[in-house]
Image (cartoon, rainbow, N blue to C red):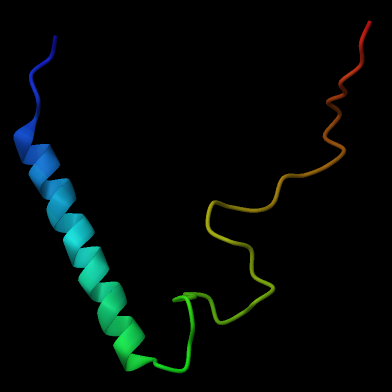
Length: 63
């Protein structure tokens, strides 16, 4: 079994804490916005890339 990488875990905790404090600071500086939306354009796609394309040639046919 591999040994735990404590340095990596510590760094991840530090990044999570930093991210949380950054979000809190942004919420306080922009009190009119709700649930911390980063994008000002509501029609913009969510993070994770473009929406899945339909009609890509893949079919689910039983045969």
